[in-house]
View (cartoon, rainbow, N blue to C red):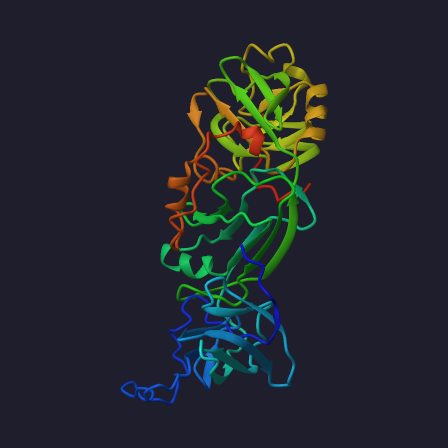
Length: 421
């Protein structure tokens, strides 16, 4: 990803469809042509349209140039104040660093320069809409700032209620991820629209800094809802750690930098409450927590130590001193992966939120969206979930796939229900 210069501007947003609001174009008529030997100035279109009203506070300054490139953008509000903005990678718009204010007037001045050095400048003045009275869609960004995450950490945004299919492209355009060093990825929606994940074709490289913005405040979503908030976070990727759990052997392999550093006996879900098989990610870590399944078909309340969540449905890795005699030979849990107190305490010091956990050989498969399931499908399947085109060249490295542990802090809000076991 190229380093992009930041300009101090006050910006406008046409969020998903920059040209839908119209624009200001050159005064030259379509049939006119420049005189022989005389270089033409670039053609420039800017949106929102001049004198546009009821513009969403999520608006961007759309720019379309023919015969040149944008070389200056300045946007000010009705009090003369400026705000930061930066261009989209494709140059189609300038995105303000924060949402615009309701019932305010903004003026954007854009200059484009042609190859000949001639310039064209267009100015547009528009007014934002009043604060929306439509119900908000609640979004949750599962990527906190100033944390260290594992190499399989997907950037996850959850929505309540889910985003309908026809609105997902608009929402996805307002989700931004930057990586340093550059490691581009793609977004993919869970089929019901309740979550969207961002990951690269390969696992994050250790030391990578990831900056995320979910700029959804005031964004029109469908016909009758708007986005709730504008959130940002920057964190880094830590050491390469992965866990592999095999039901056939009842053993967990712990890998650092692709090398097995320890094997741990486990007891998993008994046949009536089996553990899920699949590729999942550690979602949160608790030194102490309580599993409360009252109201379920198998109610119980139990305090546990050193618990690491793997699914929204309540599958954890945790200390279970009551099953030590079964660990390594018999599955007796309610779906969790049981280990000894000593092993659980050791794991808490080794793992990170975002580490890959692969479980195989159990009676059931991991369901889509039950946790952060971005790695539970191939890259080709993953990109099918994007609401926008994905560059054809964005693919996993062609070399022989390394062990997950070789490429493979923050605690997201837990799901309302906790199964445990």
